[in-house]
Image 1: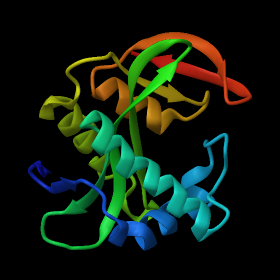
Image 2: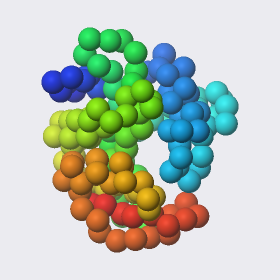
Image 3: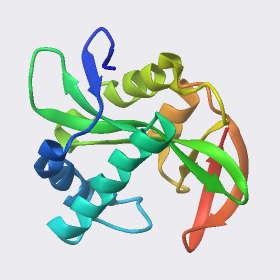
Length: 162
């Protein structure tokens, strides 16, 4: 099912989205706060995308490809992914956009759509944010999440929003 907002279309990913997913996730600028860093190669991105597709099959939720309603190009990825965090099943709120899409409110619009689209039902929604990532914090807070605690995750400090 496609989610739509006033400006965006959010669709389940497909293997045909590989090039766009790689462009976004291999860009050092979009990964400035990502503990894993940019995707090093297309094979790594392909494996990541395969995991996203499996999430949809197994859990009925996952990350989505975000496009402007009037343009076919993918501007970002956003959505909820079911995962386990410290023994608790949660749904991780995720948003990563091309730098050309930054500062226009698309990440917040997409995050709200993912939560309101019914994908927020079930396990709690969380966001893991690196300290200092003010833009990501604003999106999480705008989507209704609040700072819950600071944790160590993926080898470094993270702020856990719920």
